[in-house]
Picture 1 (cartoon, rainbow, N blue to C red):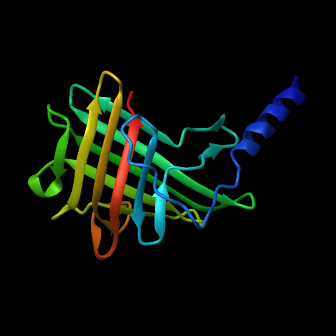
Picture 2 (picture 1 turned 90 degrees about the horizontal axis):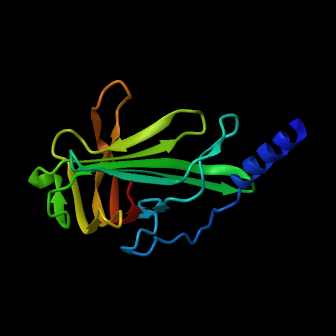
Amino acid sequence: MRKALYIVLLISLWSCRKDNFSLNRTLPEATTVGAQTIGFLIPIGVWRNDGQVCFPFAGGCRENIRAGFQSDTRSFWLSADEVLRQSGQVIRSSNVDFNMDIRTAGIGNYSTINGDRIHFTYIIRGASGLDTMYMLPQVSPHFQVTITRFDTIAGIVAASFSGILFRRNDFSSSTTSTSDSVFIRDGRLDVRIR
């Protein structure tokens, strides 16, 4: 029995360690079918949900994209991971968290400039255990979202997005740098919501 448990644990750990790094990474297609994808361009190249975050001593791996919609507050949320491995080693690990309020009509243009509530963070996990977070600043945030499908019956949200995130100074406050920024462009997502 104990031997079978070890074998299952080793198989689950090994499956989380598949190499997936490529210099020719591309954005996911801009679809509206619930493809469980998110991707965007950043200065270092393409970011897209890929790989898995694994917890060796806590039950395996989690999905690399999770999304939902809270109907009473009309709030859409999404969390996605990118874990790139080469030769069995993690070479880049990061996460995005995105949430926004969706108007009754759903489909349409949303912008922080127009006062729409949008939050987007991009967290790069450091090799030394220190994370770097980029987020929308509290003053004059610039982020645009165009929702192309909002279907609560089929459980699908699809959108395009772009904006500028600034490095969070420290994790004890929400202040951001005025110069260290990341421009996100050509963003697209197509997810199933719970």
